Length: 112
Length: 113
Image (tube, rainbow over all chains, first blue to last red; front, side, top):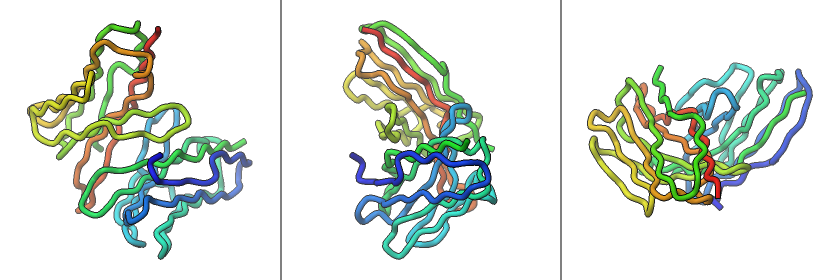
């Protein structure tokens, strides 16, 4: 158990819909990272937040957005979903002064 | 765009055999990490190598960082079924003041009893 929690574990929805994935980092960790893992593209970095502010952006689509709240939990919002958005979405967190990221168990999103 | 290429993508061997997984890039990374991921779980960090030429051992696993900090290898001695999983390498670099992890596509390892 990494200490990072993600909900829901599984999500099945239809094309065009919008979903929200939630992540709670390890206690005390200020940084939260979101990754997408699909079969053909490996693990892709989407976005990082540090203490409520966006710190770095990766290959995140405009249809996707994220935020980190004052209690440090984070949400990833995916809208206008397409079949190709089906993937595992991981959240990771890290503490101040360390680059070790601890990954949550992931949310498996299936778009039908 | 920084890319990390892992080889092989799939490897299936018998228990007791040795194996090496490679992680290569044309880019220089400040550090390189190896993760193992099991089905239904997130990646778990195995090791971080920082210095060019560095070698780290974790029981039967030996990790090496290339002298130029562009490549790495993972060697497993006397593989066991418990070593089965997806092995991911990830390079750390600083882009526009922000540190990012770039992942390889992974090596799916199966150890057969």
